[in-house]
Length: 377
Image (cartoon, rainbow, N blue to C red; front, side, top):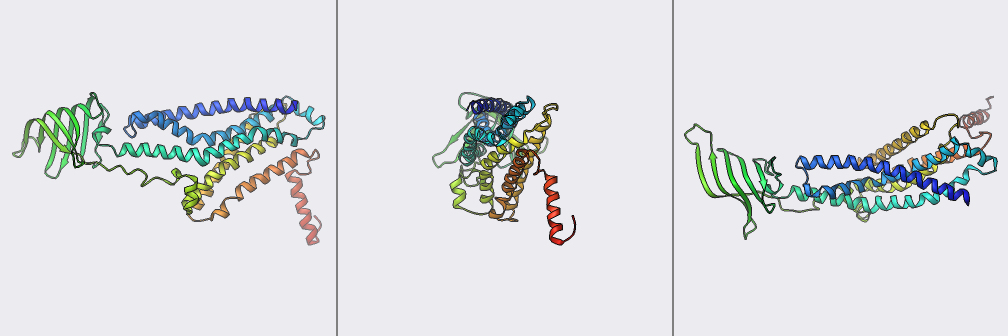
């Protein structure tokens, strides 16, 4: 019990440090990415904090998987490096005794990963997509940020405002350039506001400005001053949810509409907790290190295994999405092979004579084949 309590404390400490580092890096990268989109006018500046929260929530399952894997590996590696494992083995304690405390520590992380992957992540992606679509479907003038040129939804009109006064619909020093069949129309005004009509139509009302139409110097060039000038705004009717991607659907919705796209997304969500459990168990035999050697090689190997595992998962998802494999054929082989590797590594580390070393097993397999054929090995 003393051993298990000490190991759980060490695992919790390593997990806390690993999670803090990974979360800080991810939060910084997400902050820079979202702020760049807000500065480019792709998202509303008022939605930045919400979008950052949704983006971080999307990556939390991956962070938890990597955290659990690295924390177990670091704890096992430290025990080997400090020669504590020699004492444990000399006391008759097998490496298998590490499984129970590791599972006691890791199963809550597996459950949290499953909850995030199945429920929280689809919800976060749905809300993020709704925020983006809501901004794209806003009126053209509302999407304009002060000091920036912004193209209209219909791509034939460019807006520029110098500042915002009072409500977000009232802007100061407006410039509008409209491309028409008979030439360009340029309108400048000191103030602009969006007005809604009883029939639902919307107009941009400009006050105290000038309107230029045509090419200066030609006979049909027109210039006029106005106190009030209205132009109709072409807007999209907000219809959120009509074209949402598959990864925003809830898990029950994926199960209710089985096709190659929903099944690929379902495989991705199910694979998260499964890979979290397998990688934690894999870290126990993988943590072996020579006390006189460095421990960096184990960490590098762990990262290579993690990224290889995730890439193979994505390949299986792509195979289902493209119709090359069925869900039943693509869902289990990768995890089965990974679990088999865990069993073989445990058998190799637990047996002191290394009877389960891969080379020994290969030699036994060759001898078995030779015996069946009646040829000396």
